[in-house]
Amino acid sequence: MDIIKPVIDIVKDVVPIVKKYVKYQICQNDYVNEFKEMQTKLERRRKDVADELLTQLIQPGKIAKQEVEAWLKEADQEAVEKVIEDLICKGGCFTYICSSRKVDKRTQSLNEGIFKQGEKYTNAGESLVVDDHLIEYCPTIFKEKQERLKHQKEHIEANLKTQRMQPGKIVRKEVEEWLEKAGQQIAIKVEGLINQGECSSSTNLKKNIEELKQMLEEAKEFTNAGVILVVDDHSIKGVPLTIEECSGRDDVQEQILEWLKGDKVTRIAVRGMGGVGKTTIMKQVHNQLLKESKFHKVIWVKVSKDFDIIVQQKMKFDILGFQKRIVSSIEPPLELKDHDNETKIAGLISQRLGQGSFMLILDDVWEPFSLEDVGIPNLVGNSGCKLVLTTQSKEVARAMECEVISVNPLPPKKH
Image (tube, rainbow, N blue to C red; front, side, top):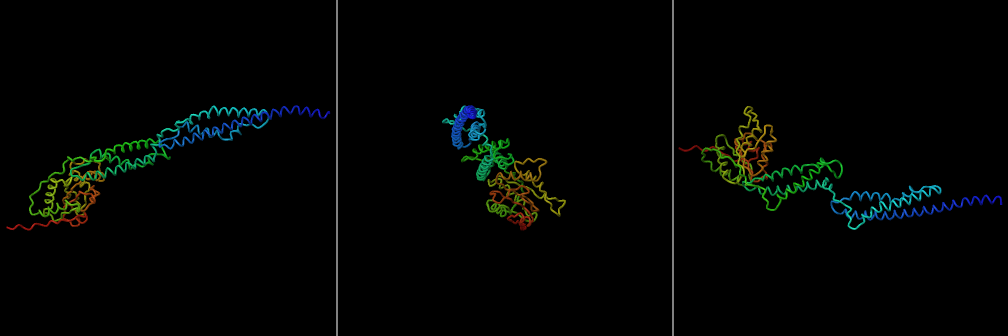
């Protein structure tokens, strides 16, 4: 009996402790189950909201609301099972009490906090997206609008080419300005407007996209059916030249005019020795063309003075001097600046001559030269534009790829 009594006393002391341990262990399990149930409900709500968001994002130009994205992220973190391990303390009775309270408190927090917050996102008709204003300023949008502008420019240029074939017509100023600006926009590289990344809020990118949108809007005026892109050219077609009476050259003059009226021949060389009447014949042709509507411009340029006489044996050609003669011969004359070089002036000449059909007469050419260097547009395929030069040289005529009309001396008059 003496031995049994101490054992009974120990049992009496242990039993209440065991009961209390089991009680709190059971309570804790209940709290954990409640928490897990809340997690499951939250996960279902998170999935419903995520599915609805995907449906609404199908609409073009839409992105998720920031608050919705933040809620989904927080809900996803709360739904992770590992949260339980962080809440439950390992140990005796006291620690189980603490754990149970923690789990119960966390369950209430989920129910009253994020779970309740997400309720409004499941309401019928609730919008989870907003307009994506940044999408308008993506490089892909820039390239798409740039490509559209390129097609519009090509369409306008094609219509313009047809309308400019009408005699006495020039490009409308606003059309010319639009085409020039469109060319500049098309030449812009998107890589130079943004930093790395698919989209960018770069100020330059936004600015250029807005300009492209404006230009596409303006293009509607020039692409409508039946729109007139040209106006009457009221500027002087050319200045009549004073000529001496010339007889016996009607056949040569008629042949030149015949070739000029057709589209087959674009370059003509009137060749013959000095004093046979080449210049006089071409002055008559020049004045005759001023009366007709074949060409928008009839231009006469004396070339011989543009060769360097000091180095006569080398026949050095003064391109700049020649260009200035062309500039002064075009009506109305082009305005040059003191610092304009040959390349700049060539561009100005090419632009002006390219505004319509022209007839360019170059008198007294001694050496061949590059039409491109001077600024004379390519005559191949440039319907309605012609070049006639007078020369004494077969080599010049051949090098300039001209069809030759020979002018021979007249036979002596019979007394």
